[in-house]
Image (cartoon, rainbow, N blue to C red):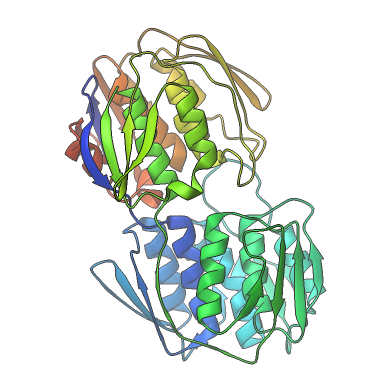
Length: 419
């Protein structure tokens, strides 16, 4: 098992390219199950989660080929309708196979998902929606079993906005008979990217990016070619890295227009962020101002940036409050930041951070994907050596983050545990 060792205190300077979005790649790969022919997807990040969804697809009989970040996915012949526990347990997004399989094959058997331990994240909204579209749903031996001769259009109102629920039902609705309306739909850019791919495949979708999405079902979809949108969470993480190290970096392929809430809050801290040519210039301030943050569904401040922002606030001048409204267990990283000298206390879903003059390097343990990033960011600014263990979480969602930081001047290396 790998760990990442960071010598803090180096200022990040240079240019770096933002990778393709993990959270867009996974549903788009699942969407290939709806088509015959060979899809071609570009700008796909090299991540464990991408490899997991590829394994899920191959297990279903889908042909997958990869070369230099481009994937050719041919689901003309789907020979299996089961996504087994051994594959699904490591990644919650595997549930995205459910809607396309039921829509195209008339049946699916998908294991209840696993993934990061940051909250319940139940899939009941997916299942209620499929039932409204005429599917018969049974939960048996840890699996969701769904059957439908052909799904029928329905009006589905989500109790809470759900990204994967919106994506799953939007995909299922493309081949349903009649019109489906999704109310209180998720508005994330990744949902919009998926809708764009589905429309290229021949789907009829209106309203993606708003809370009301309409899908008119068609008889069949065809293969297409698409370039995955850049990862706004990776871009935000690199922006925080510049802020923490008083850095001066330029982000290439930065999805700036999808990052308004993050950019606004970082500018409040004193970090300078400005478009420059084909990139975005980020310059950290010598004095980090304290700022309050409340996570919200898009276009609000993303929960996937909360841990990284907390690392930044740990070194701010003053008191800041971070409220987590999306997941109930997403403060697990607090105890690890405290090991580095951060002054943080939690009250329910609220963290109160009193900024300190400096952090100290320590041995810390990553507990989930974004917590991994926050500890690495803290290590960049800490005095001494920080060792972050269990970084397999990091590799699920960041393509070579340690290498990108090294290119920018960070004193960082990956070593085997025990070395």
